[in-house]
Length: 78
Image 1 (cartoon, rainbow, N blue to C red):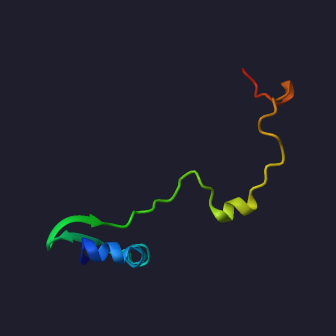
Image 2 (cartoon, one colour; image 1 turned 90 degrees about the vertical axis):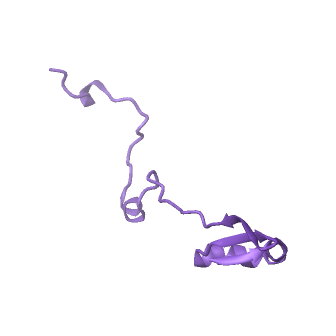
Image 3 (cartoon, rainbow, N blue to C red; image 1 turned 180 degrees about the vertical axis):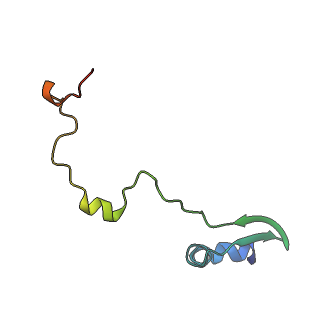
């Protein structure tokens, strides 16, 4: 964890944000030597709706999924 005063954080904001982004470092902001806030990296989560890259390359839809089925294509309702 890096501890910086507000003035130092303002003058070095870009560098501190780079450390957060690349090194996943936490920055503690202080005013007059007393901690007041932490800046922490955001935890990125995988989007469950995003298709896997290997599956995406191999999957091809060869029909229009919005097109209605004909009578012959409907399953038997017995």
